Image (cartoon, rainbow, N blue to C red; front, side, top):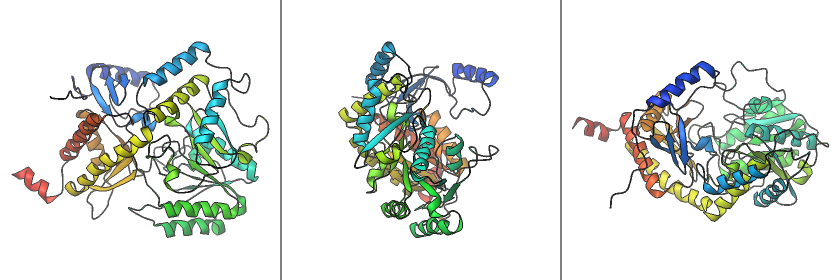
Length: 451
């Protein structure tokens, strides 16, 4: 029996209604808020997004990694609606509420940190990073922070100072926060290797900032915006050792990697170390604005009374959604599902490296995977123009893809983990068609094209 296609294209993309709304957008929305995909959403369900023109797409962008449990999961919708009907806001530190405490209990139990653990909740990933540094500075009584080239930690002042990519994030927006230093991050595809990156970190204590002045090292276990650069287990363990040697707080940024995305609840579990602090956001509440810092009690308790907080942080509706997210992840086996999805997607991607000479690398963990688009595999020269063409060709075929990378040449997977096998196969077929439409430099495809 023939299966029904999830992709349904009834108009050109963008359709007339999307085009009309986007024209209105140009007249009233600040221009820096540019649009990546030229369509306007009407409804989302699971891994499917339907626009205002009635076109249905398979969504591999996942709200930039916010939708591990998919669009509008009924359990999350029900939880948010029920909480909104009871009360929507007090500020937890003024009039507290139980679900804040319950979420803290559950996350303190879930994170891979032994001993006594505490949590605090905020609005965005950037806010979580900002507050993690406040905790670390209060605990160590030190000013400096070390991050890594290629890292992305948000767009507020301290987070943006740590963020590595200049365009479009930093250019023209300085000066940035002082006492922020960056060192190289290992890249198994283009370099540097582990030894070089570790030597630079050690040398930084002699040439850039004294180790006894460093409060925190902030690191993504998989670099998201840089194109899913994945360090080795040995490198991460060495950073843990260096932090311990110098009394530095190790902050692991799980904003994009957490909540099952990599085939573990948290990506740092792949590396065999314990962080001191972890930042979480994005999929924690299925797109509701919620973030958190979870970590060792002695660090989390270090700031003075009322030194941490904010009017909207830990909103009860968002927390209700987060509690439902944890239930869905557990009940639907989404951590295990991410590992299964990752195997299926990586298998197809590995085949693409054989078929297309411009697919230079496949990398990531679990379902958090990316391909690196290059001019050719021998040179490894980034090809952002071709990556854009592939994304455009995919959207025209009903698949929404998201680019990444310092050079804008990577295409990443942040698909909802609730996607069905049939939808996944359909999506990867559309992606492969988009790759083929962009042209190929392999001899076999060239011969086929001229046959």
